[in-house]
Image (cartoon, rainbow, N blue to C red; front, side, top):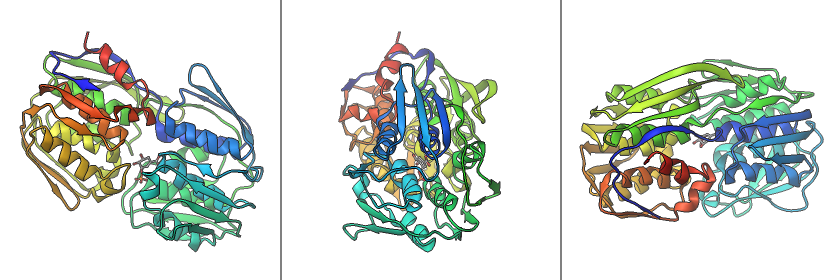
Length: 426
Ligand code: S3P
């Protein structure tokens, strides 16, 4: 896959449905009573892995044309023992969230995923789930998948999470539905709150106060109609493309702007970028709006502290943006980047360096000494979808040719990405 410099990017794009919300809609719909209808579902490989896992446990799920999914829920206690290993593919969200649900079932399951999933830390969910009484073990004894989960009686806990992670928080809260008493999770910084919002919609007794989420044991969840907002984590590629490409103006329609996810807006403004939000409204209990960006003169900033969980998946793309800003941009408090689909600190630093950028890795982030004119290079995406999309945008703003290895990994979260990007070149 090859990319060359473009003169401009102009037009409108509608990004696909939010990945986090799509996963949750299928999961909660599967353990609810009744028929959950999901519109604007993300048909990316990760969310299809979630569908596969619940189908293997007997849930009747229909995928229709037009990104519509119908889940005929089995109820909280109606899942069936799968006759195969549950395969989560590349999806950390599937692996970690489903572990909370599986811990509350009356049958044993084995949960596995691809090479990347088999390297990602699972102790962060195994520790709290075991505290709740779950019987969950890493089959190879390395605290990674494959995981074996046996039936057990769950008790409510109050868990002080060492990481701001919505996957950890959600795993515990989902197990909490099956526990015999109240469960609370306290986070060091507030992570995305889609589980709290959506579980409430499904009728769970769940509350949030500051950085604490609390759920009571449930007897039943009720099916919902969910319209998934567009994914800000997919919008970010066009946000950055519009800001750094000359003579550009891009509108990204229908983007989810939940305050636990909208850190890029704040950072782009701090860097002096031209970004506006119009048509703010609500969709499926989440705020959405249209984002417009224009070519801008950018200045460096520091990205750290409580904003980090609000843009964790967008940080690779923010690092690219910083290459076009005047001064030293510091990304800190972001050691979590090392345990994503790839080690996103080293993969970003290696690939940006290959393109001629002046960038250094730190313990918990990176420093980008901008501005750095980029030249084409061969980019090893490490099969990480967010790395591939970031460097496709870099390639449009670099001299020479930029070649992506394994660029088709965008299928994980945005199968139509290259097509949508192409339309903006006209
Ligand atoms: C997600 C939470 C985040 C994020 C991931 C999706 C979720 O992971 O990086 O892409 O849907 O809960 P962590 O919980 O590991 O921070």
